[in-house]
Image 1 (cartoon, rainbow, N blue to C red):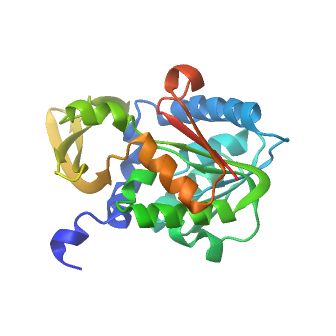
Image 2 (image 1 turned 30 degrees about the horizontal axis):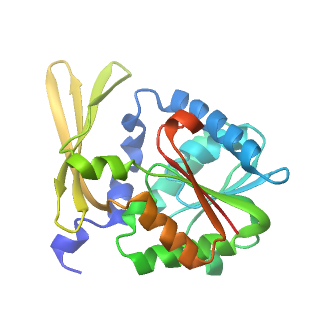
Length: 259
């Protein structure tokens, strides 16, 4: 892999970001609680039977996994990034919340994760890191293999149907203050003709008038909801629905997929 290609490595991006990922939120712990409550409601409203076990297959530093475990779910959580898994393990132990973590690529869930689950979860726009249809179908097949017969897949992605209409160039800054140090995070997006885009993720730390800036890069594909639906149907799912934020209360559009 060339240096140019490796600079967009998903694994490298999240390994580097893991120690500072919480700055994506103004208050990570509050966001964890809010998201887990909304996901808990979605699970209960859309499960055919009582759901108790969850596989979070793109858990990052544990934002959803730890929050749902605190609500009583038995959670097994995986991620491509080993550094994110280390951070998530540390956070769950610090909060005394039992979660099992492991480093697993979403394309290898069937091979490397034992058992089946009532819910498979992938939030925070993780799926669009998969850039090709065939690879997304493969991920869908792996997710499907981990679901119980009445299980559901819940994922969240950015509203690309809307974003593709104007192809925004940046995100609004998020400001947080931890230990008297102000941190600002924001993204600049460079769009490509194939509806992929490069994210330039900036973390700016300010203390006593001195700023320290870190730039990290990764790449996404702006999938429409129809494109993701088609890939999941091709993977073998029998039914795919979408809930928009005004319906779900979640901050991103939600995909609900069943066998």
